[in-house]
Image 1: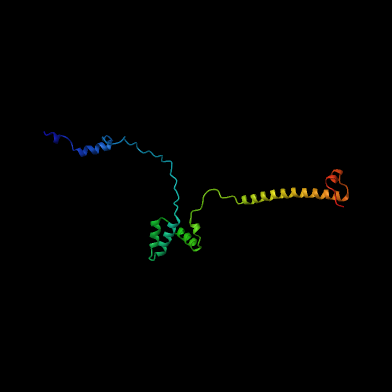
Image 2: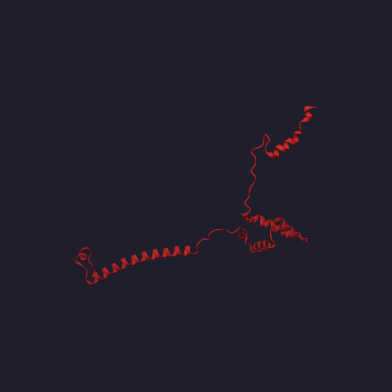
Length: 161
């Protein structure tokens, strides 16, 4: 028998080596991918950009034949309620509302009021201090005018009678 006829087909061996991972150029045998069937991945919302929304609305406005809008919505993966909302926003010239709403905590509306109250309180305290000083000056002037001022006051500042 011929030696070439006794060897099996090299292509058949290559397929067997690949299946078992024994091929000379193959990497380490791949571990079977085990998934936890109890954990369900969370679906993520799809966010369309303003340009995409405008493009879809323009394409929907160009549809004239029956069924074209339905085909467009299936192709783009949007609902008719989305088209209605986007049209209403576009008609109201509210392009800023087409952008996704900012998520997270909203700014505190009372913060500006609290800052204004704190500023008014500081100003009130400052004015009270000025008023106390003015009242002291007026009291001294009254005493000086009546002649009830102390000798020290008369020596340093004579009252005008």
